Length: 535
Image (cartoon, rainbow, N blue to C red; front, top):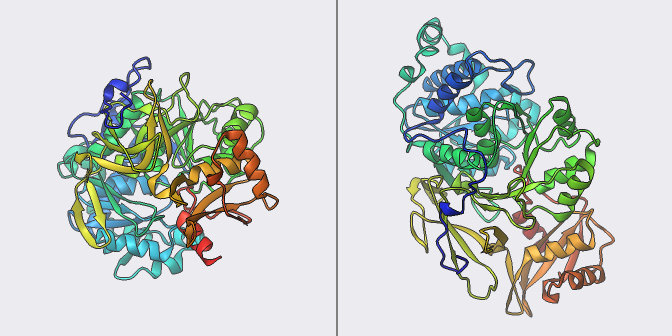
């Protein structure tokens, strides 16, 4: 099973956990999943969802907002149109997304932390001509100029659009649509695009990832076959819904499981989020290693006393973060792994069978192949397929043209670009992105090994490694660190204690006040590389 060309199937799924509380039914869409949840958990059950506005929302409220916003969006768009969504983590934003897809539009989630150029590239990639946003949001977030700088798009503000909801629309909503919701919208197609996400652009122009209703809901079902989620849970989600981790794990799982959801507008409010976890008695939280590090530094001991499950993804979980959460809060962080192209969850550790240093076992239904890479020992390039796989890419140089998934493993497979290994028990270890290997003096060196050495030498600081061209050595490693006292001698001692090769040591160390981050919580390696080259 651990040979480079092994097929890994659902046989690696965990069978000793509770059965899923949500089984994906072929043909289901996000909207029909909302309607099913309403019937299952009650139309008027209060307090299911909340955000930073006063009050809470029932499933009936969610349905009402979804229908109303979908009908309004239909007044300014046509069926099949790709519509940009430039909105914060609010309940109304989720309802707008579901409403657009329910009425046959394709919501394209714009990353408002990417700047005007990043949003411009995303709109061009997906052929977006209409962007729905909010004046209040843009003003509070300081995004007015950036949004207005996006060329060749029509910004439509929800504050203005709501005025177009006529008496006839209200009669349709209150007298018919709320009671016969599936008849009030066009017949859904599970294979139709439910949403377009955009890759972070850390390695070039962002790609549009087209995720169908089937891919999203299948991934929800996969996750819920290995975790216990239900109405007794309270999920805290500060991860942006323009990122697949924040949408699927942090939003759609609560939607279909009946769990309460507390949406927060920014993961960067490091003091507020622990306070919110305490005051709302949250039991489930998803985050990145970077964010969890900052939450722990700003939290009181009892802020996370009701927290049962904390899942880390999107970047490698630092040992120091894992140790801090265990020692201060008695919480074992469960590290998982996924990519936007798989909606995103591929593997995750579980309570009771958590194996630190790995990202857990593949979720049910995911198959994988490990294809060898010349020059890299002990790992191979990870290719995957499953019901949660994307429909395909939109690329910047071929706007709006769907490129179905394919890789060296065959059609219908996706190359994650990550180097991985698999142990005898089916646990997956991610050694790093193939693009994050430096060729130093003819040898392939993982930049994540360089970062692990830095974390060993200085566990309280944050570090990131990149590489630049060098005439003598091919490439050299540059380490950015928030520890101004860190020396190469410190790193050499840490490397010896870890048994890491000396060739993984950086040639240059650059001290910074903080590392640049993307809105998703990942380190902005493209910006670091530019900084290294400029230096």
